[in-house]
Image (cartoon, rainbow, N blue to C red; front, side, top):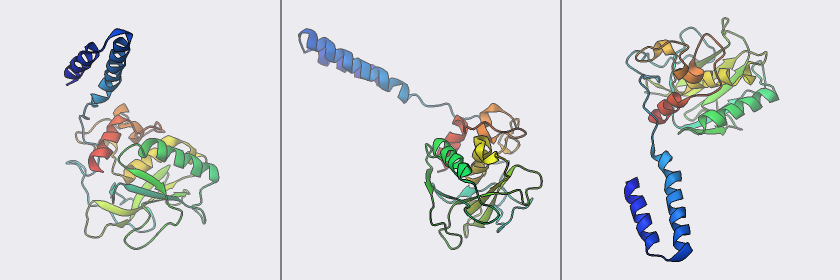
Length: 232
């Protein structure tokens, strides 16, 4: 298709005369040169890193208001990703934490098929709850830096969660984009390496911010972006 476009562009230029034809031909060919790289698609990942897959497919655990060891990865309910940063009580985020969280979400998740939006009027019950509620506290984390758990599963659906809580401890961890990227990844179904199909090393660079055993890098990476776009 690209070859045919160049041939027709050259033919059109040949029908013109003088320097004008040369200028137009140069413009047409330069347009093709710009468009050509965009036609190439990224290679498909050689593992399945999003829930549910053939190795990791527990029913999405509906846990209510506190995290437990029974927490599972789930899918959020749709591509509209409404989030709220707790502004009062024990889970309140400081202003700088809110700023860094928002920057990460819009930089990493909004360019995917997900549509990130801040919920200034969060909903905590019913059928249209705010998708993610972020808290800052170490309560019930059992030594972990952060955890994500489904507060309310979608009625009649084994895989999707209507509202997910993310709790990350203080001491600046909200300002480390890799931590917030990692926990948000679980909200939309992204998995650790030991749950992918086939299993890959838990610190494999293909996992992007879903690596474990270290502070993750702050980027989703191309594989996770493809997984998200395939599901949403």
